[in-house]
Length: 255
Image 1 (tube, rainbow, N blue to C red):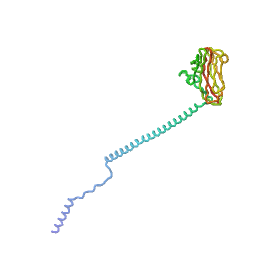
Image 2: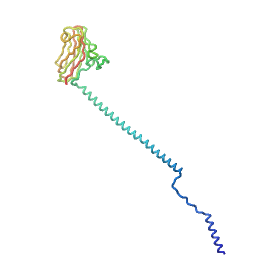
Image 3: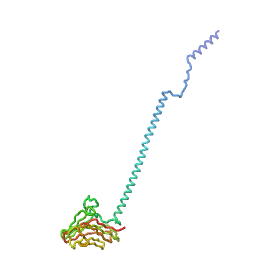
């Protein structure tokens, strides 16, 4: 009886302990995210992806800019090359122009128009020079083949001379020519005489022989030269009032 009572007491004590300290269940662990977490994660991922895409787009213009810079450099290089080529051509052209050339007129301002064949710049004497004695002078009139011609005239007895120094090639025979118009006056001794300082040839046109009044006439002749410069001089001489017009001066040798 006592034994049974003791066993019952022990059993009741054990049950009480279990009820006082029940075992906590282990919560299952899951790697699956909740829908809200998934949405947040996806949004974040999309944002990251968008940022990368933006970075990538932003990087592209930089590359394009580099390409543009390269093009600019290339263009600058072309410009420099073009300028260099242009300078060479200019230098070459200048050196050719500085030397006498076959078939090219050695006379500058051959028509007294200053190189402007339209006549808009007005008449010019340069680089010719003019001298005269008492009674002699010059002016400009309308030309035959150009806007201007030079008028050499006297108001009584006198002379008027024009001259120009030309670049020439020693040993070459040049052809000289000019147009003249005998306007008025004169006697049998009135003349236009053209000379060359390093040639034995002198051309003298006398009134009554080859000088015909009132018409334009071309005169030409051959001039062997002996030096690298030649002074071309034409002198109008008259004992009475007179006038002659001159234009289209040429002086060249054949190629």
